[in-house]
Structures are given as C-alpha cells and as structure tokens.
Amino acid sequence: MAPEAERLPLAGSRATRRRSAIIDALTNASTFHSARDLQKLASDAGHPMALSTVYRALQALSAANEVDVLHPSCGEALYRRCTLGHHHHLVCRQCGQATEIADEALEKWVERTANQHGFTEPHHTLEIFGTCQECAKFG
Amino acid sequence: MAPEAERLPLAGSRATRRRSAIIDALTNASTFHSARDLQKLASDAGHPMALSTVYRALQALSAANEVDVLHPSCGEALYRRCTLGHHHHLVCRQCGQATEIADEALEKWVERTANQHGFTEPHHTLEIFGTCQECAKFG
DNA sequence: GGTGCCATTGATAATCAATATCATTAAGAT
DNA sequence: ATCTTAATGATATTGATTATCAATGGCACC
Picture (tube, rainbow over the protein chains, first blue to last red):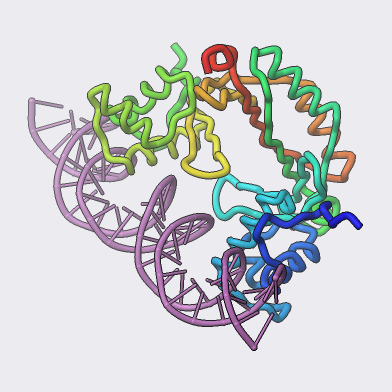
C-alpha cells in the first residue's frame, strides 16, 4: 500500500489535540474568524489553549494551504477553512457568511489585463463584500 | 467667478507646509510608499516632520479620497496619490511601479456575481501583482 | 499689522496584533 | 518504556498605528 500523501502534514509536524481543536472550530464555522474568535470557540468546545498556540496552528494550516486568510483594511486577520485550489470570496459585511467563487473568465481577464500592460506572472487578490439575503431582510 | 470647489479641503482643515510636503512627495512618486518612506522623502526635500504628522496627513488625504491605500498581507500600509474615481492597480512585485486599471467589464462581473448569490451593494478590492517589463529584463 | 481661535504639530506614551523566547510537556518512532 | 524533538504556555518583544497633550502656527477678522 502506498502511504497516504493527499493531505500530507508539514514535514516534522505532529497531530495534537489543540491543533485538531482549531481545525474542528474552523470546520464547524462557515464564516471567517479571527484568532481570538477561534481561541474562544475551541475553549467553548472544551479545548482551552494559549493564543500563541492558536496563531501557530493557523500559521501551519495557512502554510499547508488548509485555510484562507483575509486581511481587512484594519484590525485582525480572519481565517476560514477552504477548499483547495485558487478561488475568491463573497463575504457578507454584516454576518460574515462567506461563499467561495471560482470563475475562469475572471482569471483570464486578470491574465489578459496584466499582459496588456507588459506584466508577467500575475498574481491577484480579490474579495467582494456585500449584504447577503438574510441580512438584507432583517438587517 | 465661482469659487474653486473641485478639490475642496475637509471642513475645518488647514493648508500647512508639512501637509503639502507629503502631497508633493506623493505626487512626485509613481510607486506606492509607506508612511516611513514618505517621512524620509519629505525630509530629503527639506521638510522634516514627526512620523505621527505623516500618519495624520495620510489619514486626512485618505478620508478625502486623495490617496489609495494598499494593505499587504504583512507589514506596513502603502500609499499612493491617485486619480479620482474607482479603479484598481497593477503593481510590479519588484520595483513597486503601479498602473491604474479601470475596466467596466470587471465591475459588471462583480455586480453580476454578487447578485447571482443574493448579495446586494457589492464593494470589492482587487490588486494584481506581476513583474513589469523592465524588471523582467534586468531582474 | 495685530489678535484670537482652534487646527496642527512633535514628543511621548499607549494600543494592539502578531511573533520570539525558553523552559516544560507530550507525540510518535524505536 | 525510552528517546528525540515538535508543541505548548507564560511572558517578553516587536512593529505599525493611534492617543495624549502642551506648544505652535494658520487664517479669519479687526
């Protein structure tokens, strides 16, 4: 049998209960959360831990592309468990609910626009903020 | 003659030489600069000032939509003098040279995508990072 | 030109997220 | 069970940005 290599952890990293508590908290949440949020969520689930541990877990997960990170213009970074592969987010500005977006046309547009201006190897960041149906109703 | 109202300053704000030194530094620069950068640029131009003054000037300019702010995933915020109106940037990852981009098709795509998912009043952030022609040649 | 009000400035302290340090604990291979 | 070494927690530190507050200086009005 070949060794499982699909979700290989970082070389030399260990599976600990703090780390999986963070993963659980992220998995149960459908919205973006700050490191402090996640500390509270894990604590409420019976897994209290130091904030530095949360940051380290998020760092590892982010390096392994297991979470997406949002850097709002001010305040703390926000984390969310995501599917693999390149995609963007549609985030409700009120409840934080986020939907993943992957659109080939957009990717092509970026490529084309960059090339038109003589730029090569374009990377890009895009986030859309709006008001979701629920919040538009009751907000 | 009608009073000049195109670039009206914030109500109750005053034109000072520190503030115009920052505006000059921003105007002369074609790339994004950090607050520290701008402090040094102004100082080199014969207008030394405290860092807090730089931040306050940038805050005021940003509130008046006179500068665009970039928040890279880590480190300091970057500022640039910009044309009015909604637009995005194509930034060289090596030299920082930035080009403004305004594309109606993209704006429509954002609107359409948001609406498809039931989101209203979509705002968005988009920045493209690539390697410009010069840097590709010599980098 | 002089006067007065109040925004601006600089020096400094405070804040706040995120990271570094380091002794202790605990995975996981042997 | 033992050993190696990553993970953890408590704490200190960093680094960007903002708040505080007395002193200064625009600028509107006389």
